[in-house]
Image 1: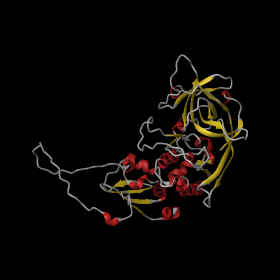
Image 2: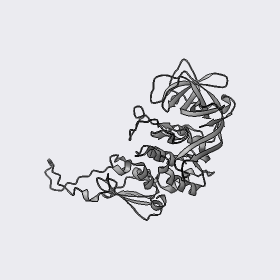
Image 3: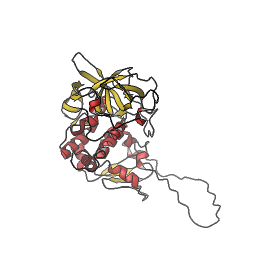
Image 4: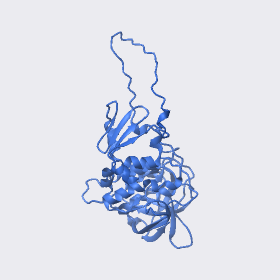
Length: 375
C-alpha cells in the first residue's frame, strides 16, 4: 500500500468521513441568523470561518495512524473536510476559499518526504546541524498522537514511511530510531497532558500488556513522544556512542512488528538520587552524581513508575536516559525515563534544572565509559 500512495498522481481524502458510505450525505441546509447593521450604509456581508486543517482535531481521517502514513506518502492530496476542500502537496497548502496561511503552509512542508529525507541525511557542511532533523521529530510527535484500533500496528503503520526514507537516505532505522544519530534519537519523553503546555491532542500514556519494541524506542509504550530535550544537545558533544544494535521482526515485514531487540552502547553510567515525589512541568527534581560524587541538579521524566533512585546513561553532558537493571546478565538495562541535567548543585539556590543548565560540564565530569546493553 505504501507504493500505491507514494506513486499515485492524486489522492482524494474523505477527511471528514468516519465511514465509507457516501450515500449518507445530509445535503445542504439553511442557516438563519440575525444581523443588525448599525452603519446604515448599503452593501453586502460575507461570513468567513477560516480554520487551518491541522487544528481540525475532530476530522475522523486525521485521527487515525494508518491514514497519517498514507497522507505523508501521498505526493498530492485533495481533502474533503467538514468546512471546505483543501489542497496539500510538497510545495503548498491551500484552502477552497482561497486563503493561504504562510505558517500553515510551512507546517505542511515539514511532511514532504523530500524535506524529511534531507533532514535525516548525515551530510557534512550543513549550516545549522541542530535543525536538520526537526522534520522527523515533528512527524513522530504527530504520529504518536494518532489513534489505532490494534496496538500491534504501531510500527507496521510507520513502516511505509521508514522504508521510503531508508531508500532516500541510505540510513537504517531500528524501531523508529535512526542509526546515523542513534544517541540523539534516544532522547524522547512522553507528553503529560496534565503538565505540558500547548497540548493540542491530549492523550493519556499507558503501558502495553505485550511486547511491541525495545524499551529505548518510543514504540515500546503508548503515548505522545516529544523530543524537547534535543533542543539543548550540543552538536557533536556526545558522551555515548552506539556499538551494536539489532531488532528481530515478528513476521515477514522487516520494519513491522518486533519480537525482540537490543542496543549495545558505551558511555558514562552514574546514579540518580534524591528524586522528588512532586511532579511539575520540568518532571521530578533530582540529583545526578558526578565522578567525584558531587551532586548536579537535574530533572527526570519517568515514563511511568517513579523511582526514588536509579541509574542514568549520559548521552551528552546535560542529557541522558534513566535506566534500571533487568534480568541476570551483567550490565543489562531497560530504559525508564529521560533526564535533563543542570549545573553543580547549590544548596542555597534550588531552582529548576532547566533554568540552571550550564555548558561547562563535559564527559570528563562523569565516570569512565562502560559498555551496557539496553533491551
